[in-house]
Length: 73
Image 1 (cartoon, one colour):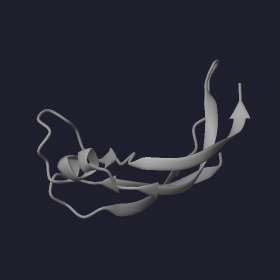
Image 2: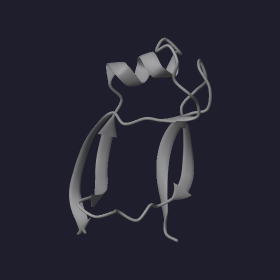
Image 3: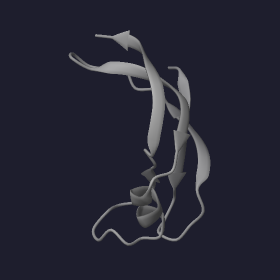
């Protein structure tokens, strides 16, 4: 399976880390996007610092992405 790069926080208060993951196949009615650039938003910082109660880690960051659709199912 193809690989993708992602930014995650392994635990609350930890630094962001770049990881490689399996690229999931989109399901019916979903699309695959190619992210060209991504910024970190306020909710990502709050997640990184562990201030959202009840979330699990490792947590992938979503930020604000600039992308285009590469596969439609």
